[in-house]
Image (cartoon, rainbow, N blue to C red; front, side, top):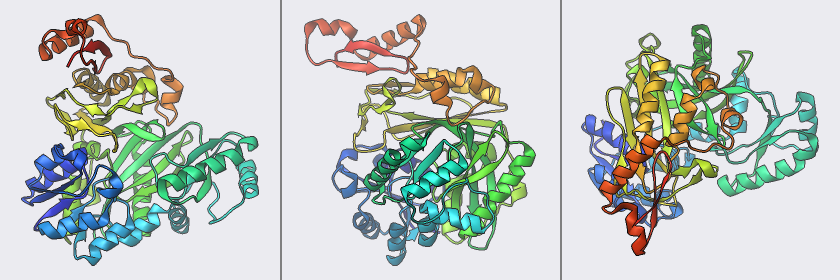
Length: 496
C-alpha cells in the first residue's frame, strides 16, 4: 500500500479523498494556493504544501509544483480528484516518470478518451452505439451542412477536447450553422487550447444516463449501476439520482454490459464513468467516458455500499477487485444536489465571497460532502462548489421528501446558493413523476424566482439577529453594509 498520498486538488473532493485515506491509515498531503491558506482541505490533511498564487495556472495546474510537493513530502501516489489535472494525460505520464503512482487510468487511456473524436471511433470499432453524426477528423462548413440536412435539425456542435459545457452550440437551422461553428471553435480554443469540433444529432428530449465502472489490471471489469443526471444548467449537472426511473431491469442489464464493453475497448483500469444519451424510444448512445471520479459518486456509494475512493486506491496499488457483478445491487434510492455559491436568479452566476455562517443539515440518511465552514472564503478563481448534499431512503418518494427537508434546513450566509431553487425542482410535479430530461430547467423553470414563506422569513430574521446583535437596525447608523443571503431570499442589508 502507498506510504503517503498527495491530493492534487482542493475543496470538497480533496476533503472526501482525505477521509478515505484516513480510514485506510494512509497519511495525506494537501496542496493549496495563497487563496486557500485557510481552506478546509489544507486543515484536514496530515501535511500541506503551498504551491503558489491564486491563479490556477500558477498553482493547481502547475505540474512541476505538484510533483515537487510530492517529492518533498515523500508521497508515493497522487490522487487527482476531478477537474484541474485529473484528465490531463501529460500529468499522469509525468507522475509515472517521477516514480509517483497516478491514481487513475493510464496516460494513453486518458488521452484517447479525452479526445471525443478518438473515443467515438474506438466505440464504433467495438460496436458500441454512438450518436449519429460526423466522426471524421476534419470537415468543412459544407460537410456540416450536408450532414445536418441528412440527419435533420436540430444538431449539436461539440468541442473534441474538454467538457463542462464549453464549446457546445445547438443549431436549429442551416442559417445558424456558420456562426455557431465559429463560436464553438473559438470557445474551445479559449477553454482547452484545441479548436476542433464535431457534429452530432441533437435530441430535444433525452436523458443523460451514466454507468459507474470499476476495472483492475487483471481484466476484471464491473459496473455499479446507473446514475440519472438529466437535471442540468448550462450543460452541467446539478441534481443526480440512482436508480433512474427510466431504466428497467432489462435495460439496466443491457446498458451495464455496454458500459463494461466500452471500458474494455478503451483498455480502462481504475474507476471511471461511461455516459450515455437515452432517447424517448429506449435507444441509448455513447456520449463520452470520464476518466476520473465523478462529482456525483456519493449516490452510487449510498445505494451500493461501495467506497469508490477506496477502490481507486486499491486498484492503483495493484490489488484485484474483490467485487463481482453479482455482488452489486441497489439498496433504496439516493439523490444528490450540488450546492454552489451562485445566483439562480441571475443565470446561476457565481457568487464568491466570505461565508459568514454555515450550518448544513444532518441526520439519518443525510450525507454532506463539504469543503467549507463558517468563516471560509469562496475564491473567485475556482469552481464555486461548496458541497454535495446527498440523501438515501427506501423509496424515491421518501428520498425526495428527505432532500426537500434537508435543503430547507441548509443555511449558508454571506453568498448566494441555489438551495431554494433545488427544493422547488424536487417539489415539482414533473420531477415527482420522474419526467426528467436534459431540457428540464429550460422547460419548467425558466425565469424562476424564490417564494419565501412568512414563517421561514421570520425564523431567518431571528437567526440573523442572534448572529449579528442589533440586526438591521444597525443600518441607520451607517457603516459598511453586506447583504446576507439565505436559502430562501435576501434578508435586507445587515451590518457586519
